[in-house]
Image (tube, rainbow, N blue to C red; front, side, top):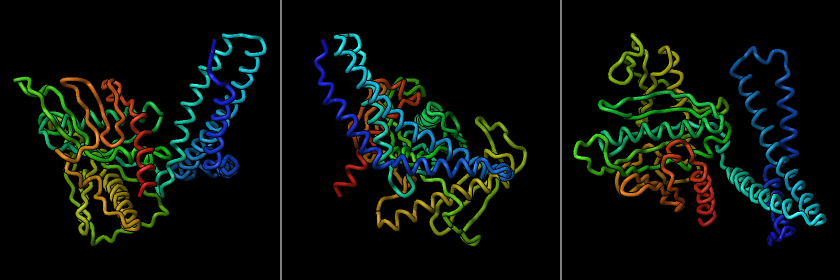
Amino acid sequence: MSTIDFPAEIRALRSTLESIESVSDPEALQAKIADLSEQASAPDLWDDPEAAQKVTSALSATQAELGRVTTLGRRIDDVETLVELGREMEDEDSLTEAEGEIVGIRKDLDALEVRTLLSGEYDAREAVVTIRAGAGGVDAADFAEMLLRMYLRWAERHGYPTKVMDTSYAEEAGLKSATFEVNSPYAFGNLSVEAGTHRLVRISPFDNQGRRQTSFAAVEVVPLIEQTDSIEIPDSEIKVDVFRSSGPGGQSVNTTDSAVRMTHIPTGIVVSMQNEKSQIQNRAAALRVLQSRLLLVRQQEEAAKKKELAGDIKASWGDQMRSYVLQPYQMVKDLRTEHESGNTAAVFDGAIDDFIEAGIRWRRSSQNAD
């Protein structure tokens, strides 16, 4: 016989949902959906495909956000009815089913509650992520490629579109660096807690003596700029170099000098793009990423923060934020939140939601403590 205090559990679920609704504001979401629906129905919408894509994506995301809140409200109502019927009919199976549903609702509420913590100025933005190999030689380059796959698989699991903008391959294996976009609302808010130095410990597959190797990679996350951000960069502050794109092993990707390396002279920020088909496209993509990074600099300056940009992280001993240990035991542990997982294969396959949620909660608690 179930010993759970159903009335108390249901009251707790409703209380959590009410606090979420106070932040997400379902009425405001409905008004936003109405406005976006009107824009989406305009006969000339697709005259500008890029703008049309933004409208339809925003509409889909807002409908999904409202749907998550309303669906949880209905589920709480349904489980309350199930409990009442189970008690009235003395049906233990129904009460067991209700107990399982309460556990599921609580888990979904926790995940939705994390979204309400993403209230930073740029948290709702799409994200530009750059991964760089750090100390550790070829193992570090291989680790950088493992992290790239991990984040792309995470995005794929959620149905978030991604676009790899630049890949710089290491000579023996792996990547020197890679930059990609995650084109989904709140991608920056979620992935920003992934910024920092990541550490891998394993038996090196590149060491013929089978020794254990520690290697590092740095992850940088910046918000994708929008046209309204007004990040103007004078031409005199930009140095542009063009070169020939190449893939792993020196395989030619393009037979012309279409790749672009853009340097912002005042800050020294360098952006490389080679995955578009033409020099013009690569130049536009590089400028957009450069603007995104300068936007983050401006945000930090305005907030009087003294943190270094994610790209300035040493990616070596002493400043890692997460460890991935494959030998002598298997464990992924975040050193800030203490969250850990023994299923390293799942983590490298993109199962990092628990780490992201723990990071968001840790960041909010740290902000509240300041």
